[in-house]
Image (cartoon, helix red, strand yellow):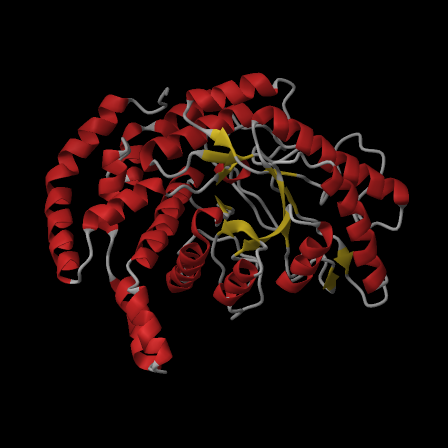
Length: 431
């Protein structure tokens, strides 16, 4: 596997921090042993964890009002893969990359797949884009894509999704994520039932084109750009559509796409119970659809999500394999640093969820002991597993402190020289 940041520099970084890590790891191991927990099992579990990166996430995001380009942004999919390779090299937890078409469309998928493999990466779910018009397309999506009144517009959107499947097959992907911004901004703008009927008709054509070993992830979003009635606005509609379409259709949960105070972990439990939990787009939110760094606002909620996932894994065994991906907008930080930090926070929640004493929790629940049930979760959540995460990275060839190692490498300054800004264009595909 080729590395972007000099391996010698990473080894030097680790050498400076190794003694402190060993001391912290030994102390944590002793504390966990008194609770009957083997730290080595947790570290081994941490090394198995993986969350995919969004290709668009390594570029600078923006708001509806402005976008402020970052230094050395990737200008094409090849440069995006280089940035993703840096993140995985240092965290050892992000081997997958999710591409978005047509932003990342390539005329040579074989070469792109080889580049990814050279970096120790693979391609996760591919994403279609029918929420904005592309240069040269015949029909506009201003008034809808898969739900459009125009049959020709719907056919165009279906054809694009099928093209994404074909590109994904060439790249080694096994899933298609479909999100549409279709909906209404005014009461009466469209027939609410008719829009969903047209959506399902369109999705049936896309579903029929899925290879036998592929999945389709249906993503819901409460609002924006449809501010009155979004066609796929909630998990119930997503679930109903997935049930209607078939076994290969699953629901995708984005942590930022819910009304404030929504019990997201209960949604996770419900979808897992009925076999329709496809995966996640991890981010965080304060008000709604914020796409903030994972764990930056409500890390306890992230832990509670993974607590439900741990319960589902215990029930479902090896067959339970939801897809994990980050989906964030980085407006004021270096995207590489934010994605590294988020990968660590998601991995942290995964490990903390392994610390829950499930036998004791069940006893408390059966005894209707609400306080001790909550404390069983809080004990796991309050445990600082940073030393476990760092040791997992070290043993897997990553960096003890990924952000510090990245900053010391000077990578951003180097790519800033090699990647002059593209006037009037967004490298990430987001404006």
